[in-house]
Image (tube, rainbow, N blue to C red; front, side):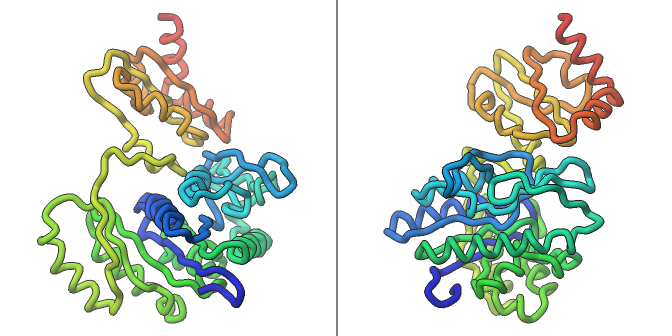
Length: 332
C-alpha cells in the first residue's frame, strides 16, 4: 500500500524487456476498472522513440509512452503526463533527449546517468504520489529488470519506486524465451533484503503446451522462494499492443499469401515505427523489417520511418548500401 490517504499501488516488474509487463499492466487496469475501482496506469520512465499525444492539466499537448496511453484507455481514464512523467528518447548509444511531464526537458548522457537523473526521480515520484492521491489504485509498470544491480543506486523505476511507495511487486517472466525458472529465482536472489521483502510473487507469461508439465516447476519455485505464482498466461499470437522499443521488431513480421510486399527500413534509431502497424493488419500485405539491400529487392513498397539521429542513420544506410538500393527501388 502507498502512504496514508493514498490509493493502493502495485508494481508489475519483469525478468527482461518484452517479458509482458505492458500487457499484464493493461489487463489489470481493465480488470480493476470493470470492478468499479478508480485505477490509473503509471510508468516512471520509458526509454522509447515511440510516443502518443495527450494533454496536461493546463490543456497543452504533451507526450507520453504509447503503452501508458493504451493502459489509460483500458483503465477508462483520460491519458495524462503524470502516467509517464519521464520519457527518454535515445539519440545515440550514450545520450537521450528528455521529455519531462510531456514537454522537452533537456538531455541526459550515460556519463552522468546517476547524478544527471536525480531531478527526474523527484519529478517521477511526485507524479506517482499525485496519481495515488486521486485514484483508488495505481498499477505501475517497471522497466527492463529490477535485477539490474549495476543501476540500482539511481533506480526510480523498479525497486526504487516500490521502496518509495511501499508497494508490492509482481515479477513477470516470459517462458517462451526459455530459462524462466532461473530468471525468476535469480531476480529475487540478486535483490537486497529490503527489496526482496517487497516481491510478492510471480506471473508466467506466453505459455503454450501442457500445463501439467509446468506445475512441478512452479511448485518448486514457490518452495524455493517462499513466494506465490499468481497465474500462467497463455501465448496469444493475435495480441499486439504498441511496442515501446525495437526489441519487438522481429516479432512484427507478418507473412502469408500476400499480394504485395512492404519493406520497412530498420534504422538503428528508428522512431514511431508503430505507425506501420496498420499495414501489418492488412490481409494482402506482407510487412518485413529490412536491414540490407537484398531485403528491398522484391519490395512493392519501401517505407523510410522516422529517426532520432538523422545523420548517423544516414551514414548507416550508406555503409550497408541501402541508399543505393532505395534509389534503385525509386528508379524501378
